[in-house]
Each structure stands twice: as C-alpha cells, then as structure tokens.
Image (cartoon, rainbow, N blue to C red; front, side, top):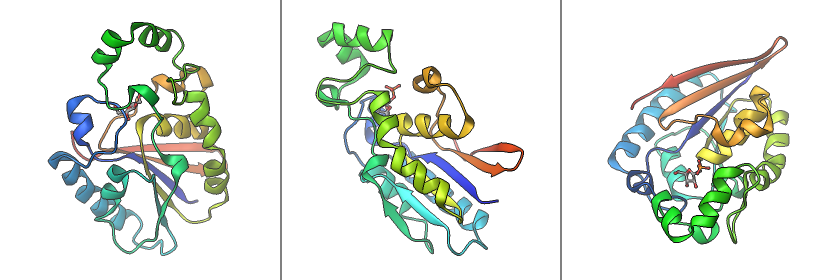
Length: 195
Ligand code: F6P
C-alpha cells in the first residue's frame, strides 16, 4: 500500500502576523520545518523511487519542498490556499472591524461563505476534484505540501468526514498526516516534527 503524506507549508511570515492569504516566504521556524520534513521524507520514502512531491504554486509550499532532493516536484494551482478575495492579507481582527457583516456571515456558515471576489470552502472542495482523481490513480507515494483550508478538504475526503465538519478540522502546522488506504479502510498516522 502506498502512503499519502499531507502537510501544511512551514510557518510563513503571514502566519506569524496572523494574516490570511498572501504569498509570503517562510519564517526561520518555517525554514527549520522544511529541513526536518526533507529529512523525514528522505528516510520514509528511501526505497520509493517513483514517489512525487506535490505543492501549490505559492512560495511558501515551494520553499517548504525545496530541501527535499531526489523526487520530482509538481506544482498544482488547485492546491493553492482558499482565495480570501478582498480580505487577502488582513488579520481576522481587521476583517471583523472593517467588514463586520462579512465576518458574521462567515462565522454563521463557514462552509458556504464565499469571500467577496474570492472562494468558499465549497469552491475549494470542487476545484480539488482533479487532484483527488489523480491522487487515487497514483501507485507510488505522494507528499502533498499545501495549505490549511485545502488540506482540511483533502483530509476530509480520505478520512470520510462529513462536509459540514470540513472548515473546522484541526490542521496544525509542522505536522505530517500519513494516510494509507488498505483493504480494511483508511489508516492514519501523525508525526509532529516541531512546535
Ligand atoms: O491563516 C493561514 C490560512 O492558511 C489563511 O491563508 C487562510 O485564509 C486560512 O488559513 C484558512 O483557514 P480558515 O478557513 O479557518 O480561516
């Protein structure tokens, strides 16, 4: 059975400042995670010559993958973080203060709420369909380095979690979720590489 390894990018400068979206680089902490992840992946997939590394098109996932050597890397736009539209680059506090109605609508229905000129979780789930089809088709291990909202959706698919839970699934930084699909169902292991 071939594992799928899911992880968020290492901590980014926007993560440190509590800002959503954007396309910032990694913090020092995030760079450290990238090294630890490379170490982990190289050991875990030592005998898996055909494994591939999938990232989004955003810098923080590409930089997180960069210390990993020996495996082909593929960038998917469909793995980019939820598009927060007019709220891109803001903190949740700022959204609450400047656009209280938007903040409230999202709080009420996070799954369906679509950021003005951006996306909803349902939109993200829909655009992930080709990624899921391709993941199911793979015979070799895949390491998916993506983002919080996208990984919630991907994880929910494999772990068979109901749609309504997707936006609230815990998806911590610096943690690898390993998924194995066997005959008896889905097995899951977690590796927290650092805080
Ligand atoms: O804060 C990191 C982040 O990836 C943002 O870029 C994104 O908007 C957010 O998480 C998604 O999480 P939530 O749907 O809980 O706001």
